[in-house]
Amino acid sequence: MWQRRWIGLSAAWIVGIAAVVAVLRLPDVYEASARIYVDTQSVLKPLMQGLAVQPNVDQQVMILSRTLISRPNVEKLVRMADLDLSVKSKAEQDGMIDALTKGLKIESLGRDNLYTLSYRDAKPEKARRVVQSLTSIFVESNLGEKRKDSDSAKKFIDEQIKAYEKKLEDAENRLKEFKIRHMTTNDSVGKDYYTRLSELTAVLGQARLDLREAEQSRDALKREISGEEPILLPEDGTSAAAASSLASVPEIDGRVDSLKRSLDGLLQKYTEQHPDVVGTKRVIHELEDQKTQILAARRKAAVASAKPTSSVFSNPVFQQLKVSLAESEANVASLRARVSEYEARYARLKDSAKVMPQMEAELSQLNRDYDVYRRNYETLVSRRESAEMSGEMDAVSGADFRLIDPPRVSPQPVAPNRILLLLMAFGGALSAGFLASFVASQAWPTFFDVRSVRELTSLPVLGTVSMIVGEAQKRRERRGLIGFLSGVFALVGSYGAGLLVLFLLSTRAT
Image (cartoon, one colour):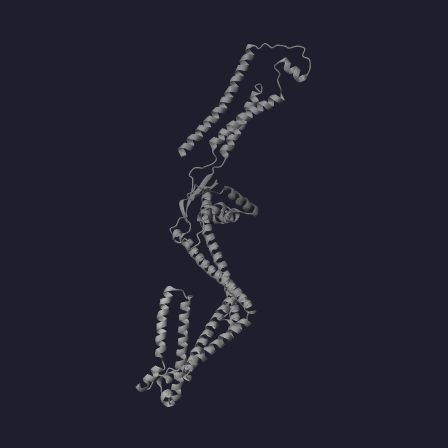
């Protein structure tokens, strides 16, 4: 490679000059950018907790930022920025859209909902218009999507409410027709059959008991009026002694009182089964039976000897008994009617034993369907109110887009980085020189000893001839070395001077 060093140096100069020309001819690229802050905090959120649907605004904004650079939005951006004025064909328009899609950038700066929108182009004004249009699309897309989602939700809920209103009307009509069809048994429907049967049995038993009590009271009044147990007050004082004789027997009453006192003393000492206690009770019972017979005989004699008009019909007690008997008869008739009605109801309820379970099942099904429809209807109505409230709350307290830095173009080009490119060009020139020397050395090889000739040609080497270098040849080689090194240093110096000039210019511009 050293023997072919001039070829390498020439290749390095050629590649270096071509690379410098290419770097210097690259157009300047300017970057337009804007910063937007999305404020998703609102004081209404905690106040409306549970009353309105509160979407995750942070997540919506994040998804929007990731899906903003889509083909429909880029086509809209092309029209807004007037980039389609110079487009002459569909292919050219597609190429422009693809280039914009690759060049547009949206970057999130941490967790503070701060976004940077940027675009690079050789024309500063074009880059600024693109970023301005992208900023407008970013803000309007979020608001439009929220309104669209809210309107779609309200429309769907309204349709469901109308459908459930129709279902509610149908269910109410079926329930009304069922009640009209079974009007006579509506009092039984809705309760368990056996519960109603038990209640009606208890009421019927109580009515029958009241009837028996009324009949016993009426019969007692009849006995008193007929004279079986007449208790009539005397009309004057002359018959007071007779009335007293009809109510007591002094000799028997005295014996009974004495025996009762004796019985009390025995019960304090003995039990009920003691023979003395049993005998005393038996004697008391026989005396009371004897007194009852004597009094009955006296009453019959008094009634037979008394005048009807004076002792019975003109007696106020008799008249009061007659009135009480009439009232008792009326009460008995009323209770009989009540018992008859309850017995009829009981018979009807027993007859409907086969039909009642089916009616109750049908009514339960109707009520269940109606309850489900009504519950869903009420839920949908409340959801509609919540959706309307949520839409109004989004309009008032939704995501607030604040333009921190308006779209602006950097005063100095951001690309290309010519210093870095020149460094890469210098490295490429040196690599090209080494590569050219290597290729030349492989194309025209040079042998420096006998062994390499023998190995390469596989021929016997008979001998070698040495060359004695003269002073003229040495001077010529020395001049060649100095020329080569001068060429190398000149290449390095040229690149160094160019880099220094570019650095000074960039520093002065900033």
